[in-house]
Image (tube, rainbow, N blue to C red):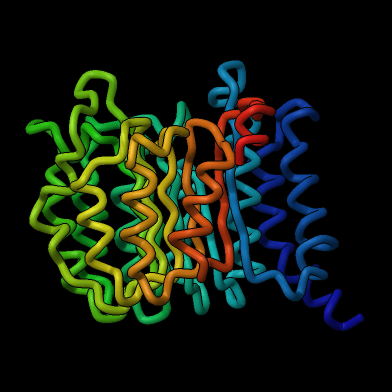
Length: 340
């Protein structure tokens, strides 16, 4: 009972402020206050084991500047106020960056999605002002960082610079527009070398994703020719690469080969391997991975799936514990199965 009374009393100043701001408005606009009261007095205090939060909303064109913005402004910071001291993982969409507090408790993972129609230029500027400061304020505890953006015209250098200044990162996830890393007028991702060099000894997981810019396009994976790809990551265990739907190239294979002694999990997404073994692309990859002594988990995209491909995996990678295949369906031919 004492706890409940303390909770109510601590919320009185906040509720008075919120109610004061809504005086004179129509009853419909008071809905966020009602929700805030419910969260404060009933919902969040009972969720005593919450350590992970994800805030993502889909804003439709008829709701721009509408009630959802008001609700987010009220609810999001107050939820962080209630559970922030025990929060370990936080994932937000970029519009929520404006409500980030200066400090949370012992945050270990932080990810931001700056994608879609919600990420406007004004939101981008706010994000660049808030996110780097938030990361540096938690650099003694944060070990896992993920950031994604799909607009190649927007500058992200403050965030990349911040990742270089972080003290110790175990996981780095970056999903960038290809135009961001290839266009002379956009951000040069050569700063990636500094990021990897700073964290090369303790980096355990690396995820690289690319969104093709329609103007720049994708011809060859020049991204894997940059000198930052030569940075040694001796303790890397998990590697995820999301690239556009282009055939497997030797540059990508050469990059993966660097981690042969430590890699446990490999995911190559959106690179379709042909169903024809005579193409040799799939077999060449599997034969290369067969020399990776620690590899246990493999995820690939296939243009379709057949028995011949399964034989390739079985003959070259018998030590796998997990094999995840994404493929487009194509019915098996009875004659082919009969011959086998």
